[in-house]
Length: 233
Image (cartoon, rainbow, N blue to C red; front, side, top):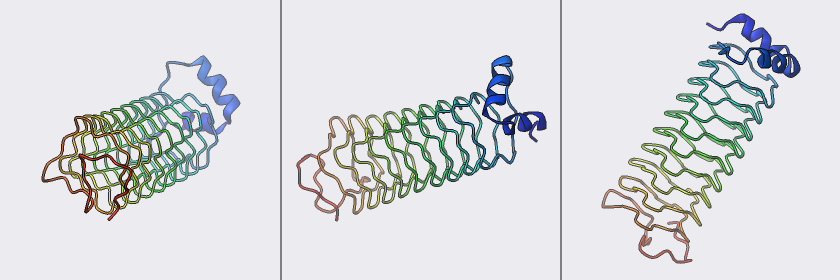
């Protein structure tokens, strides 16, 4: 149950919230389950806040600090988190449909089973993030940084991953059906168990990457030949 004084504080507006936050830098906000839909707090300091199960749909939190915050099972549909800092945040099971994550920092974040469909995620930082079972279908993840991330069982159906860096990522059971993954980096990535049916792949770097008979590549695709010829069937 949310602390109603904390909820009132957030709803008092950016100026009041910022002033109060500067005076009480050690206070961890308890906003669990709160209705904060449509709230506008760009640049807000919400580090470590308890937002578990909160409704943040349509919220404007661009440039906000949400590092180490608990957003598990929260609803952030259509929220603006552009350039927000969510390093180490817990977003497991969250509804992140159509969220703007442009240039956001989610290094080391937990997104297990999160719904992250139809999002703007250009240049997002997901280094070392846990994406187990998350659904990124139809999102724009151009130039996303997924180095060392855990993509086990994650879905990237019809996702744009052009220019992404998946070096040293692991992805058993990951589904890249109809994804676009051109000009991408896969250095030392573990592709065993990943599926790439009808995926658009060319100009890639598979240096030291691992794959075997459990890796399903597009028909006619040669992982040993990173040529310019596109393969998507």
